Structures are given as C-alpha cells and as structure tokens.
Image 1 (cartoon, helix red, strand yellow):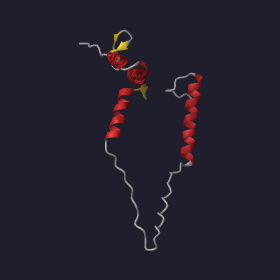
Image 2 (cartoon, helix red, strand yellow):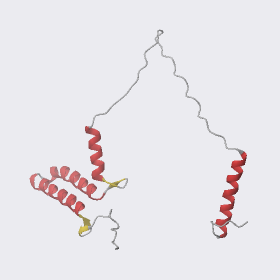
Image 3 (tube, rainbow, N blue to C red):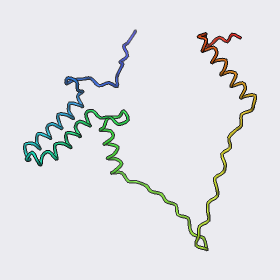
Image 4 (tube, rainbow, N blue to C red):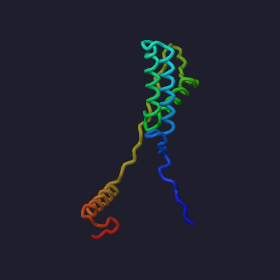
Amino acid sequence: MRYQVPQFIEVEDKIFGPFTFKQFVYLAGGAGIGFVFYELLPLYIGIFFIVPVAALALALAFYKVNNQPFIKTLEYAFYYVVSTKLYLWKKEAPKEGGRTEPRAAPQALVVPAMSQNKLKDLAWSLDVHEKIGSKGGNRDSLAL
C-alpha cells in the first residue's frame, strides 16, 4: 500500500493573507500595545514607547538571524544573561625568588610525510579522472 509522504514540512502555512499565524500574532500584539500607548500617553511621549514596540514586533515577525527566528535569538540571549557563568583562572604559585618560571614550549606537531610513489599515484589518478571527465566520457569506465 502506498502512502503520501508530507513534503515542505519546514514551511509554515499562510493563514492570514501573506502572514503565518505566528507573524500575525506578533504584528497584532505589537499593534495592540502601540495602540494602548497611543491612547494612554500624549503622542510626543508615546512615540518613544511605540517605536521600540513596533520594531520588536516587526523583528519577531520577519527578521531571521542565521536562518533562525528572532524569538530564538532573544531566548538564547535571555538564558545567557540569566545563567551563571564559570570563569576559570589558574594562577601559578610564585617561586622562592618571587618570579614564576616560564612554561615549557609546546611540542612540535608531527606531520606524516607522503612518499614519492603515493604522490605520483595520486597525481596520476587525478589526471585520468580529469581527462575522462573533460572528454564527456563515462567516468566509471577507464579506457587506456
């Protein structure tokens, strides 16, 4: 029996015209809070509250940081500010002379050397695949 597999599950449905449900809620909430500030405060004072609320509502609805919704960025920023941080600092005890000795230099990184034969084999295999691919022939068949 065949079943249809859902596709494009990452794309949210547009429910309210060109907006998804989340976008609509963010925009409607921002407009509602802006309206409350407009009604309760004089316009020259309320504008200082309305503009940031409108900017936050627009950012929540449309702005993405590294292909992630802005609400996730705010969530991660909140967790960073609230969570405890662990700072480690290892102070070396001073020697008798009052000076600390310098640490030993790190050991050099050992890189394995490639033998001449392996290097030639690798270059030859790259040349063969390049020539076959450039002629438009089948890459799987090797005709010498």
